[in-house]
Length: 271
Image 1 (spheres, rainbow, N blue to C red):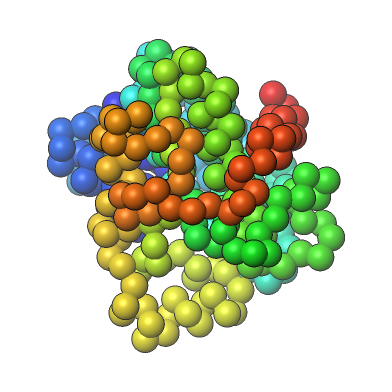
Image 2: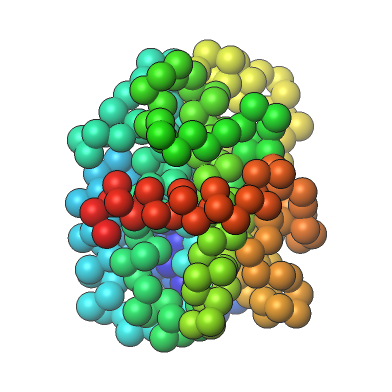
C-alpha cells in the first residue's frame, strides 16, 4: 500500500497513476477537494483532503491512516510549494514554505512510524536541486526565517531540509527496516511556482515551460525508488535524480546538523 501526498496534480498525481497501473493500492492525499476527488475516482483510490499548512490536519490524517492500515509499504512525501515574496505564517506559527515542505512531512512520517516499520517501508521525499545551491542553508535558530526572509532562500532551505531529514531517517529507522530516499524530479510542467515570487512565476509561465519535463517524466525516479529494492538498486539515505545517485549539498554530510534538525523539528511539532 502506497500513500502519496501532493497527489492531486502534477508529479504526485503522475506517480499515483504509475503505481496504480502496476497494481499497487494507492492512497491519494492533496489540498484541493475537487482535484483529490477527481484523481481518487479515476484510480478507485482511498483519498484524503489535507492542507499541510495546518499541522492538526496532518495529525488527523496520520490517525486515520493508522486506524485503517496496519502496514504502509511506501510513503511518498511529495506535497510542497514555494511561497510568495512576503513572509507568511501558518496557523501553527511557522513560515509557510518551511512548514509545508519540511515540517508537515516530517510530522506525518513520525506519526506513521508503526505502520511504516511494520511493513519495512520505503519513504521517498521530493526535494529539489535548489537545495544544493551554494546559498542553501538550514539555520537551526531561525528555521522560520524571521530574519531576512526571502522566498527563494526559504525554498532552498526547505529542500535542503528534505535531504537532511532523509539522511537522519535512514540512520534512525534503518534498524527497523525502513529505507529513505530524497529525489530531485527536475523542472516539471506543473502548477508549482504559480504562487511564488515574481521571478519564479515568470519562469514557469515563459516559453521555457515548453522545455520542462512532463509530470510523468518528473515522477519516474519517485516510482523507481518506491518499487526497487533498497540496498540493491539504491542506497538508503541517498539523494537521487534520473534513477541515479546525485550530489547533494555538502551540508548533507554533516551528521550533527542532520541530528539537530530532526530534534528541533520534533520539538516544533510537539513530539
